[in-house]
Length: 278
Image 1: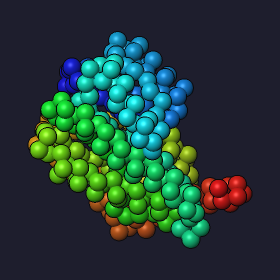
Image 2: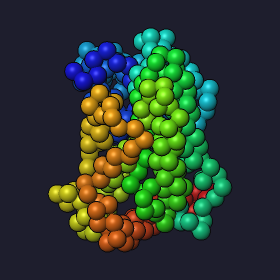
Image 3: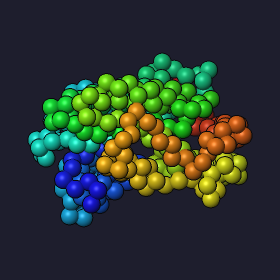
């Protein structure tokens, strides 16, 4: 059991990467605190983990709010006595053309995807310093490397997370706290599932992927497990790309990706405009 006796917090754990990682950590004997703004979803996640015989605790948490993140860490320590692993995974995405991006949309994405990661990292690290060490894992994205015309805020936030990971790693190394990141590529999740049903994406985007298919949430969970375990103890400030080899074809792949995403985004953008560009 690779995480025997360890306590892990996973944000964005009601679904997708977060839920898969929580279940994977529990399989490796970790006690798991699952956090999400979706209270019903995160409670269901905790019940699924407890049904396997592992200990779990659910916390409703808006990672963009310092008080919520502090309460998350405090409840973790109250329930389990310590915090060994923080997986700052929660994130949101707005599909909006660059020229029509509003301040509100920009700020809402960065609040969750960047400030939320910073708060999780900082508040968890303060607890880990007092304990004598720990592990922090952040979720970045392949889009940190190439951007997206209709997801500028998301791409920018994930590029910032990659750099924040480096800064935190440098700052916390002396405290025996490792900080690494995962850059998921085209992986089916609650956020991306509908996109991968789009015929244009299936016809063009998948040709650049291993086995011509998108990845699964478990692929990210396995990478998170590696970073949380002692097997990665000589890694710090790194970002692991989990994308089925997509970035290996970065020139042609980016061109096809942008075309496919633009095609898929047409309907989303129309809906966004209809809602008054809120």
